[in-house]
Length: 338
Image (cartoon, rainbow, N blue to C red; front, side, top):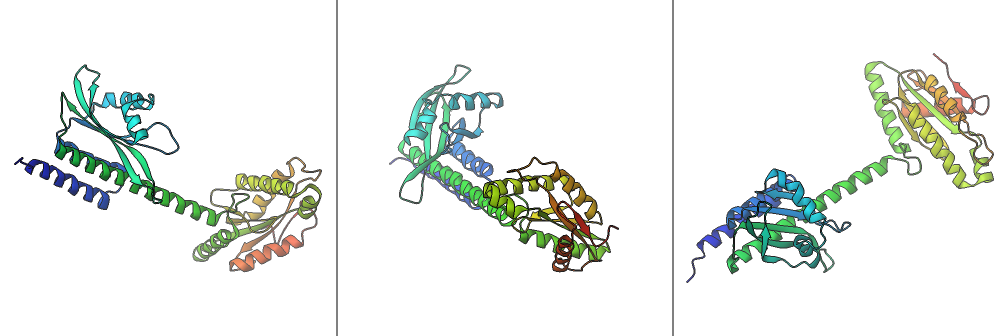
């Protein structure tokens, strides 16, 4: 009877490493390193590499190497990426591995290579290749049945790690996107009304603690309804984006600018410089080219904490009230210009 003790020991080491990598590795690089090191140790391979397969790209991408000279890694990655017929690319494309191809190293030595596709289920009954695991042995190396079983299991564990961390990354990116969308206005990219009110709450609370001021400026695009009627909503959207761009470029890093109505923008500015900032914004908007024969201007109303209100609602209402009392288009009004 054949002695399978060594094979069993190697399989157990790979299984243990795989469980640890999938359960506790902090990132994909760490998981791959743990898995591949276990595989190399269990099979006696002299070198190994993992390539990832991006569905949006034709060529595979080198993710990790082990046992390869540092000055050889970049050339190896280019060699594979630049040759669609390279066995590693074909393994990803065909989803079928090789268990004994001859490899000539740059120094002229002969190696035996094994390429195994990393295949996972896609959740709809189909399978997807997420990369290729390749290992190499100096000289001739025959892969017996026990080692083949171990290598296939290792490839499955590596595939699971790649798929798991990619999914985790996608979920994180999606969550970040939803978080960003929930705080921004889709048309202008500025903060939305919900975010502006939250920032104003925080700034008012901070000012209360520190005994400081907060300025709130509300801007309206002059004649916006008539512009939409005469030139259409696309022209109106263009004006809103142009005004938003000026607002974003004209404020300090500590200020917050947002869109809280159809053509209504608001500036939350720590300190008492709201009137000064509002005038700078209005002057910049007035330099815009006309849109649909309409000159683009904005009017503004400015209020200040704590003089004009001690909570977000009161401050916004005060700023809107002084805006309504502005003398005409492209004008500014404030309760006082202290």
